[in-house]
Image (cartoon, rainbow, N blue to C red; front, side, top):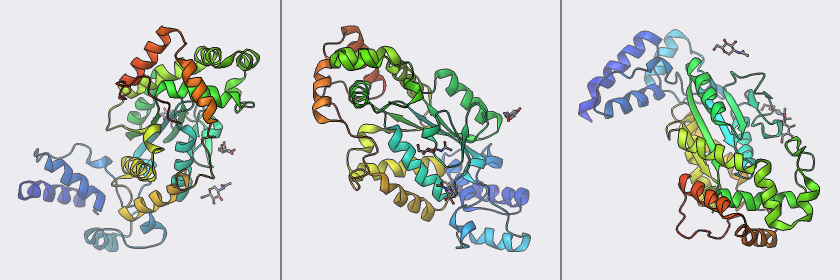
Length: 345
Ligand SMILES: *[C@@H]1O[C@H](CO)[C@@H](O)[C@H](O)[C@H]1NC(C)=O
Ligand SMILES: *[C@@H]1O[C@H](CO)[C@@H](O)[C@H](O)[C@H]1NC(C)=O
Ligand SMILES: *[C@@H]1O[C@H](CO)[C@@H](O)[C@H](O)[C@H]1NC(C)=O
């Protein structure tokens, strides 16, 4: 404790000098840096959050530190920037990786935060009701990307850097073999009938040839690219940048759902909104927990018979494809000890 106090005081002093006020969030950041033992000034002081933003702004409940309120009274309350003014949010998802669940959770969260503008590469995956296309608004600070390529990931990163924003991503991932099985049963029910992404999909061939051929069709159509992009992004992004939301974990139980959402919220907003607001956002998101609310069924649960039949048929695919699915599973940090373990839907 004693060791980092001098550094903290220095930081506080400098912040007061340069900004005229001090925040709870900056104090935390400064403490963290000094706990590393460096005692040095963090290089990104101008970028750390400049306010406890949230209900304190909207409903006047005091959330700020005594120092801040004293300084604020003297100087007039500065308008705290929103989280998306200091961070860039990058939402990455893949077909059948839990994308609908993630989008729904984020919709509730960003709605509570005031429906800021977001961009989305596929309109129906928007996370606020104020959504624009990402290719027209590449500087958007909340971006939703369906199956981002390695180039896209680099571009988003570069955009964040150019705007001097911290990049905070959430990546929805799932075991590739389960995604393939799930995509098969999902498509068998004609779920993509009016999805433009499926415009060139060979429906007749797909519907008439059974699960093994159907999964091969899906593989050739787009799924193999979904998997390789998913693995690439997983390998490329650092844990500081990305919160990885594993479908298998977030859907396991209510406790796992809550833990994942808490992790996501902290990754996105820690230091930028108060603990009270974080808790309120987590409470809102509970509406999307299928264990609490089986009736919402937003992941369009598949027919268990189809899942079972298709999973068995998976093993008759080309061994090279099976090896690739297994290798990807391992590269995504999943166990392959019991391969091919039962599918988790
Ligand atoms: C969009 O968000 C705003 C701000 O929260 C809200 O007032 C409005 O009702 C929302 N509209 C729809 C269609 O959800
Ligand atoms: C946002 O997504 C919802 C749900 O998919 C959709 O109904 C709505 O039309 C979308 N809004 C925009 C502006 O794209
Ligand atoms: C995005 O921001 C950069 C500078 O950060 C600017 O040069 C560029 O014109 C912006 N693009 C759009 C479409 O606004």
